[in-house]
Amino acid sequence: MAYLEFKFEDQITKYIREQELDTSLKFITLRKDKHFGQKDAQPLAQKKLSWESKSLPFNGVPFQVVGTKTYECHQGKDRQTKAKEKYAAERDKKELEDHAFLQRRKLVQNTKKVDCKAIINIAHVIRFPDFKIEESTVRSKKEASQTLKAALSETPSSVKAEVVYCVRFPSLSEHSSHAVVGEEAYVREAVDARLREKIEQLTLSGVRKMTEMKCHLNTFVVEELFCGEQPPPPTRRRYYPTDSDIRNVMFKTKQATRDPNIERPDEGPSRRGKKRSSRKVLQLRKQCAGYLKEITDLTYHLQDEQCMTDLSSRLKSVLLDMKANVPQDTGLPLTFSPRKRKAEKAMDPLPTKSASHPFTGGVEQHTEDIVSVDTLLALTLG
Ligand SMILES: [Zn+2]
Image: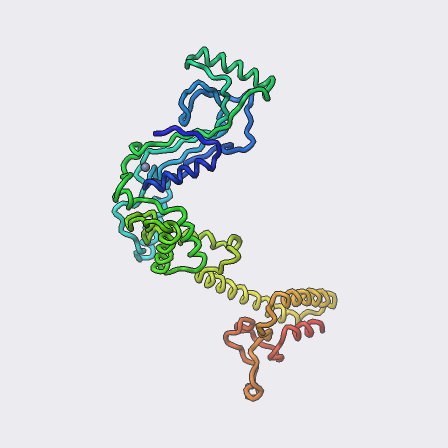
């Protein structure tokens, strides 16, 4: 294990990234205090003084902890067991109900988590080098603490304070239940963060085929990540993710962009998204057609002049709104039924229902067979 010190938070992230690149390891954030990384952290007279911590062994210098952050090995404890059990139970229930078996991957081991105990401890501290003690005794600690606290409450500006990030980085031997080097470790590697980003980008730009995706990723690894260098062996999962690794990132990306509010403006919706939205549009169109039909029907029965005037002005404003929202160049037919050729119309003894036009949908027609919205407005106006 190694105890390290950094002046800035981003230096730690960079260091961890470098360690991950040199090995087959990967660390993920386990927990982080609210105040960790706080830029304007100040020493406080009433705050607890410490002499040692997980990431900072005793060296005689007292300090105050601003916040801590812990990373764990990505093959650590499985914290999703409850959620996974719930998912499995729901899936089994669904299978029983539907009498259909959902497609399932055959997995020897259903998780990469092996309860590895390796963790990185980081403490963001403010230390007071001028109050260093020589021996770790209760008495010397107590005396130094009292003097320091008095100085902090009386003349805080006179107290020399250093902000530092102390890190305890685990050794390879602290990783348990999984290989850390060689081929065995390669197969359990996590996908490189830059590759994940690339998969996200490609997914958003519309790449769906696995072969195409892998082709792009190979080019990215060889020509960008390892430009001018010997590319890594194909056994490195970090650089050559499995199909399921890729599928997972693609799925998460698509899921994240499903909400239209967070959809990135430069990306078109996925094909499935389009289908869903067009179904929704159809549904809404039918609903609107229903309201319009009812309004038309009721208009014929409306007698009160005031009501009619109100309705007219409201309809007019709705119409203006609509005109502003309908693209004028697409020539959307604003008629209630498809126009018929004159000859055809003459042969039609009775007004008929038009089959699939969204604005009719089985609407029983009045004598005005072709009624434009403008005509409707004119009608309602009297
Ligand atoms: Zn581990």
